Image (tube, rainbow, N blue to C red; front, side, top):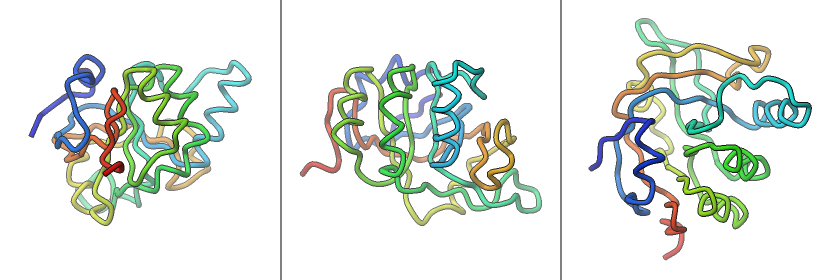
Amino acid sequence: MTELTVRQLRERAKELKAGERILLSGVIYTARDAAHKKITELISSGAELPFELKNAVIYYSGPTPEREGMPVGSCGPTTSSRMDGFAPLLYELGVAATIGKGDRSPAVREAIIRNGALYLCALGGAGALLAGCVQEAEIIAFPELGCEAVRMMRVEAMPLYVGIDSCGGSIFKR
């Protein structure tokens, strides 16, 4: 298992292969469907974005409210294909990786390859386990979206799999 920081993802992307297990640490951002729609509207209008896209990692999750002593409640992945209409643009603008569950569309796979990026998979149904990796969480955009607001989260040793690597290898093609 490879331990990586968010900063190392882009520089090590070519080394990581589909199916490889990693432990990710650093700052990631949560965003689901409604937040992706708002982010793309901001991009279209030339407005300021809630976070820098270059080398960012976006986790497709809508954490439940925090529990006592923890920054979030359950924090599992949502189905990634729901963001497939938005993902190619975000990869083109520098996103290093997205995290979710399930396969991606051909357009997303092509954007991953073209941009030397990654698609990482979190274990579905393990939201409580993944919440234990979250050290800090703060809503940074769209609080009106409730659990789907964009959060900055600092994670430590978040267990993930490389779902689609930067060369197009995929755990979904067998």
